[in-house]
Length: 376
Image 1 (spheres, helix red, strand yellow):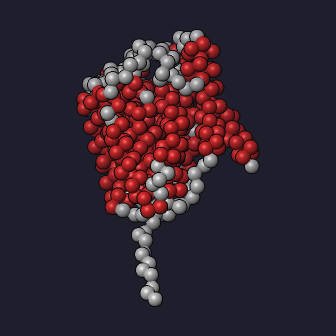
Image 2 (cartoon, rainbow, N blue to C red; image 1 turned 180 degrees about the vertical axis):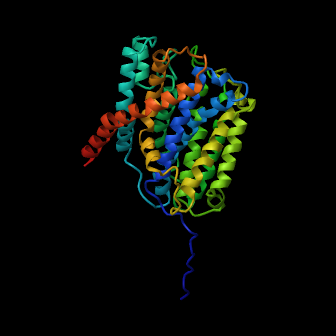
Image 3 (tube, helix red, strand yellow; image 1 turned 135 degrees about the vertical axis):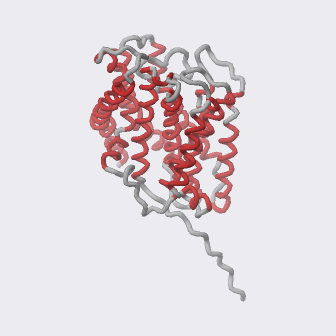
């Protein structure tokens, strides 16, 4: 009787748990969002030389979306290769709600009750509490205009289980097809801005999830690579200098008219597609060395205790910083759009951090502890 042939599998990337450098990256992404908002509200974004650079720090949102794509999709990518189990769907939804809603609802209540010029109609309250601002006209209000991205993020949370179900057939040996499927879907999503979609006045369909799916897909693709056999992608994109060079080039191109005009002027559909493409490339390049390189390699800056603390507070920095920024101008007697970029930036960052730390300690962490207790 002949002896069966045993194939030797290629080297498999060890499935990693918590990745500290990703937490550190959240810190820099949150600061990047503050930079772009301060630049706009001080008028620095209109500078002939640096305006486009400051304004394009809004690609920090691409980093946040890619981080969500990676972290939430990785259990599904691992499960497809027999390396673990994804969360049960009810626990998944409950954990997402506990993660974002308690602190967010506190911000909404305080802004709508106490911040001037925010409006107090039932429609504004309902849209903001339900995170549907991108669908309801004139509900993105002062102190919370950044929440459009959180609305898109929540839409991704809701859709992700459906994507997972649609790819259930791509498991085991067929898991190798998951990466090309995700890439093709991400590529197809770039056409979203070109599709004529009827919307109410002041609502733009390119601000919905399909318009930004490529940013989430960048992280989802990294999740697929991080749970699969080593490939040339691991060797190339796991190299920090090479990946950083790609990120710098993508950012530089995004600061040109290719990615749209300056300020809040709406881009042409092709410019929007270019910006999303460059944002996806930038996010993929910035995160790939952190998840594809050898596990033993540490990142001294991203894994520094201060950076990790800021990363833990990054959600609070994101949801509170525009409230802080709205108070900086009257407290310092400054007129919006009249300069003082560096002063306003330093003060806003300096005040947003302790506010975020308090939000984490008093709202976010107690909510998570309650979730763990309930789960036990």
